[in-house]
Each structure stands twice: as structure tokens, then as C-alpha cells.
Length: 206
Ligand SMILES: Nc1ncnc2c1ncn2[C@@H]1O[C@H](COP(=O)(O)OP(=O)(O)OP(=O)(O)O)[C@@H](O)[C@H]1O
Ligand SMILES: [Mg+2]
Image (cartoon, rainbow, N blue to C red):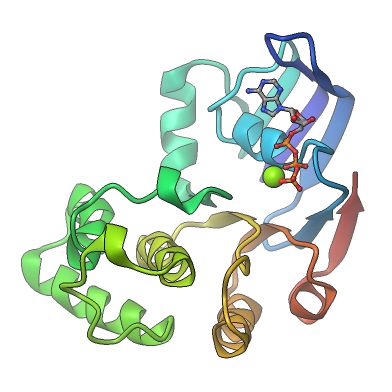
């Protein structure tokens, strides 16, 4: 589903993060990405979604090379990306609007959106949070809303950057079950071994 070929990436300040990096992620594979702080995990996810452009190398999605913004459009529709910084992700005033936004863009009707929103909030343990003000939520609640908004779109692939950061034990267990039962391609950045172990087939260590 994803293939990265000999990717090299250096930030503008000269910080070289990736050199000739290769990665293959087959459809349906569930992979953990671990490694120390600053190893380049978030940078890699941003390259995979076209938010950062590597100086060298190729990004393929479903066998097609992705270079321009237009190439990445279809990848982003099919790929749910949970940012490490949850405040960079949420942008709607209320939880209901946050979840409805993507669904509306997918062409869902009002009735469908209401039904999906109720189901997905129940799934992540936030039933009744529809009218809560997004910026007033706790960090853990924000992450769950961001996850709910992504899952609601039923993407084919999930790129999750530290999805359990700030989540309490029951939320972690709930998420573990959701991801375990999902039949999708998943790449999870996480340092939490007990969380990733029952979900993943393979680990990539930076
Ligand atoms: N905009 C930037 N300009 C320059 N250097 C950056 C920039 N963003 C990140 N870096 C550096 O690039 C390296 C990789 O950062 P990245 O965020 O990808 O690491 P990470 O593996 O996700 O770390 P963590 O586990 O702490 O989230 C780090 O050394 C970081 O300081
Ligand atoms: Mg990171």
C-alpha cells in the first residue's frame, strides 16, 4: 500500500533526519514504529502524507508515485493521519462539527452523519460529547475526538502518531480493541509495548 524508496530528508536548518530510508507497508499489515525521541518518526509520517517533501527518494501509494499536492489528495482521503500534536489537528468549535466535517466532504447526508457520529463517539467512549467545545476538552479527550473523526471516515490506512499519549487505562484498552478488530493497514508510532503487542504483526525500530 505504501512504499518509500531511498528517502533522504534534511530540515532547512541542515538537520539530516533520514538517509536512503526504505519502507514497505503491505495492505492489511499492522506495523509499529518505535525509536528514541528525535529519531525521525513524525518526520517520516509527514513525508508519507506529503506534508513534507523529501530532497531525495520516492513515495509510492497503491503503486503510484506521489509527488505533487494533487497526487497526495487521494492518498489523504484514503489515509487517516493522527497527528502527535492534537491541537494541530482539531479545528472545529464543537465535537459534533469536528466529526461531521470530513463526513460532509465525503458526501454523507445529515441523517447519515448524525448516525455515524453517535456510533463513533460511543466506540471511543465519548457518548454525549457532541456539543462539547473542542478547545475546552482535556488532552486525552481531544485525542479521542481526533481519533473518532478519523475512524468515522473509514480510511483504508491509519497512520497514528502516539495515539495513547494522555489516554487513561480504559481509553487505552478501548483503543486497543478497536485497532485489533480493524481490518486496515495501520502504522502506529508508540513506545507502549503492552498497547501495540496485541495489535501489530511487525515492528520497525529507528
Ligand atoms: N521543523 C524542524 N526544523 C528542524 N529540525 C526539526 C524540525 N522538526 C523536527 N526537527 C528535528 O528532526 C528530528 C526528528 O524529529 P521528529 O519529530 O521526526 O522525531 P520523532 O522520532 O517523532 O521524536 P519523538 O519521539 O520525540 O516524537 C529531531 O532531531 C527534531 O529536533
Ligand atoms: Mg514524534
